Image (cartoon, rainbow, N blue to C red; front, top):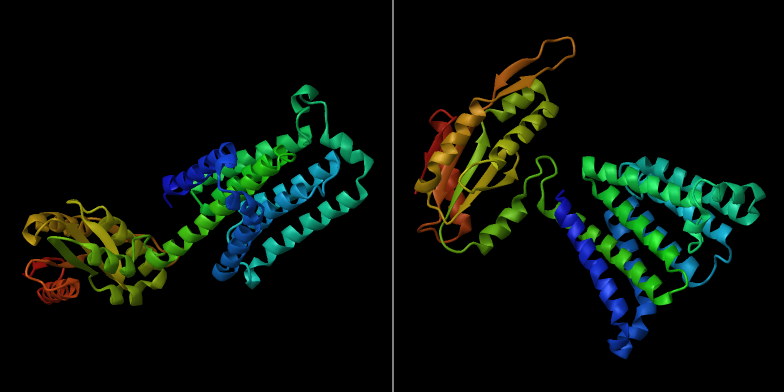
Length: 386
């Protein structure tokens, strides 16, 4: 996941919400009247996306934003203690979902997430109904000066818990760069801003809209990733290659890359080790010099496209790739009681370019023919065909 591509849309949406807030009176009247309905529309869209893609994280994050907006916009939280209970309950759900691995929304493996969320919700509701006297003392300890919290209904314990949750989620996102953690951070920001703007209907609605749009954009990014990126190797897949070639203008070189004797390797060492080989080769191909863009074509076959180059201009880069792969030992250890051993993995490459080719399909076909010739001549080599 690219952190910049994930964070930048959220920042743009936040800036857009700020601009709308300051220039709201200048908007056309129909748009002003439609704003109160927009959170309902966006919430419905995000929930539908969560069910469609079977994402529990997206479901709970959108539900958390919706609950905060509804409870505050309709003044259902009438006292500070009720606000703190609701805030902490929603916060704990967001942190739990942000930390736990995505297990789906409607799957048996998601039982742990649903159980923990149910327990937090039940406990929060029980405290909300009873509001025990000891809770007030816990929410407002004399740790920091009370004057710091005069403008907020949230107690010191609530704010400290929020800051701790932010720190944990930011650390997880920095280390693992998982979209789930980033969505949790966005949701916590929406919660904090919502409770801060509890008496400002416009700011409250715009905060909810920005949160829902960020989650919706995240779902769209997820769907794009599933459609265009190969999960095993993290390289763009065949669909991305086809669209790239459809948009290509001018001359380009195209190489078909195949792992030598991959079926035999799988039979000898197992598919798990075979997957490790695919990941290793994909990483090497992704680092090819000469400006090539690597794709996983299917199985053990990859494609590399070099824009604005002929085959003769980039053959040295592909030959260097072949030598680099052959010189990299792959460590195999089938059983724990065996010593690790290194085995050699090699690749064969068929290369051509788009010169005098009718279309992309013909270019791929010629590169495939060149790859077949490379294998026929002994593998671990580059074969060029005009």
